[in-house]
Image (cartoon, rainbow, N blue to C red; front, side, top):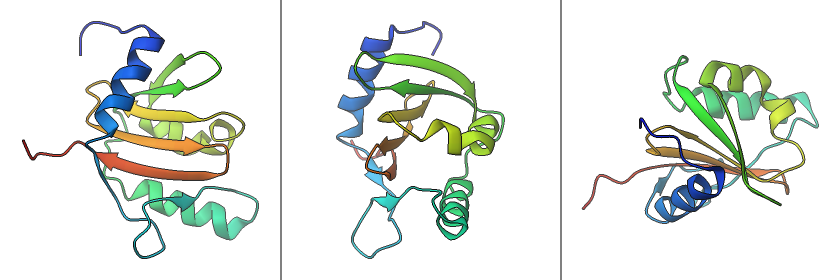
Length: 122
């Protein structure tokens, strides 16, 4: 994507696209949401393992979209997010996506997250 979207437009676009995403399974059968917390090393390691398994290139540019009260965007690369997720997944609902909006990691302040990819089905 060459043109930069305003945060509000990017938020609306990714939310609309996510309705048709296919979500990876979580740790519980039949549930796409996972517990995303670092309150114990076990939970932190489990989340890190889950994030590492998403097959996203370490140097891929991503956008971290803070959802409310007003959408904001921070740009970084995936490897930075992987190293710093404990500081990024804290007090605000966020959506992490690439510049092409082909996948998204959605985090809710209830300490849950899910990961989905664009469906190839037309």
